Image 1 (cartoon, rainbow, N blue to C red):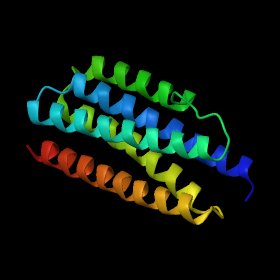
Image 2 (cartoon, rainbow, N blue to C red):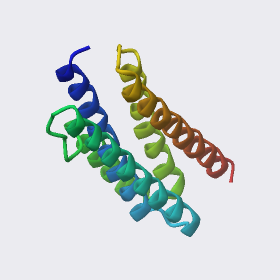
Image 3 (cartoon, rainbow, N blue to C red):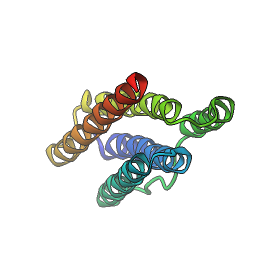
Length: 149
């Protein structure tokens, strides 16, 4: 895999993590439960840190890192906003939309890990992927708790 392919892969993940950061911030704004607000805010900060790490990696490969999310993330956030207005922004609906966003992140990281990446890049992406899986599982668990409540 040449440098351009590595940079493209990393920039795709930057868009994904920036989308996650924005999505978690939106969920923090919409959530009513203070525990959920804190959880979402914490996850937004973790996504921001992951994006910074990816941006540094792009620079180390001589590229220009992405600085914002992708169009898909913007469209998803808009859908979350519309759905939240309709449902009254209850915490269960916020968690359902958040889980959908995390499904996208899981897929993005899986696609990246299917590539023949340099060892140090693969190691970083695998570590971040574990965090994405943890986010997804936590959101799903919280959604299930709110669904049964």
